[in-house]
Length: 290
Length: 160
Image 1 (tube, helix red, strand yellow):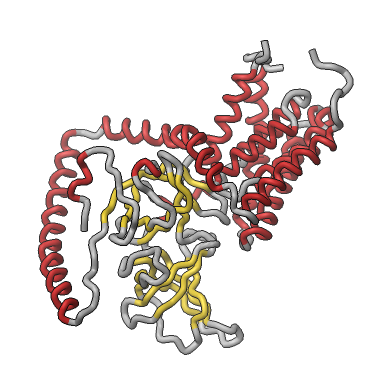
Image 2 (image 1 turned 180 degrees about the vertical axis):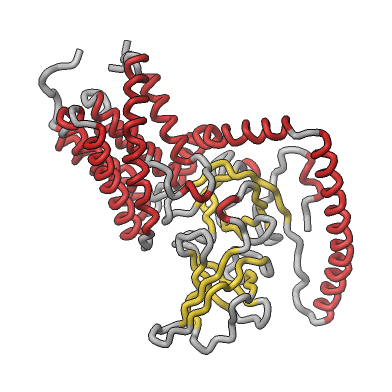
């Protein structure tokens, strides 16, 4: 039975109390950074919500799969086999070049590039604010995922791991406004810093002088500086170069190679320097080394 | 019995709102995703102000913070400030027509989103994007349907 008159503290008092609580956790989290354990515990707790969120999509995928005909499957199989063959041929050449490169590097007394281990993960949820570009993946500390780990897709770098729960982890995309990555132009080795803009299709290159040799169409690779991302993975391509003399620096915009707006499967990378080791769910990981 | 009748339906409706908030969507619809959590909160504080109050909103806000990966308390603060006028004036808003309600919902969602932006700006130097306010319009459009569905749901499961 609802009473006619309010009992307990007034509405305003309750609002102020609740706001105080919110402000306290905000202060603890942002200023003192003390909430990380709580956060990873709670992310494990809310993981079911994220699994529920992808359920309809998975059911739909399953239905589409069940309704594919034998002919389409056969055609797909044929195309895939052909693609595999081409890739295998490319890999043969690559192995040869890699060995040669290692030998040459040994001759030059520079460090031989080391192999890294990898694991595929599925995206289970997205955070949709323009000021927080994050996705949640279905691998967590149980699989050896660690904070600051590089994440790729089949075209280029996607982002890095921001926080880890037990069975899920949160990826900060390179397009997030708080993310910046050190890059190198493929053509002329010019080093640049690319910051996310909050737009999935645009990265902003910082501190580029008007006289820079960069051009529209230049491919940018990760430089390996900063220690998070390994060297030499494709990241973005310059699509706009505005040499407006009124501005202090040239305004340069690059478009990420990775399809950040439709990522479904990503690749987690364990560089050889990482202390954590991947833990595979089954035997699939035996040959996941490159 | 310490569980009041209709607790489960209430929790289910929160869960559905949270799931809809993080559900992956096609890129072109992404910017227009209605602010489901705000809509559901506005409905419940209006329909059951003696039951769904500041405490519930605070907890839902913190859960939203975890799901969105923002600094703890940002969504909580914004949702609390958004819910206050809705609770304060629930009797008045209940009697408005759908158009008027939708307008009020638009204003409330606008307030919430501006607050989230301001907090993100102060804490993380976020930059403003016009598309962040599209959901204000889509939320207002979605409101009558949310209202009707939740009213039916509330009556069916006798949530009081």
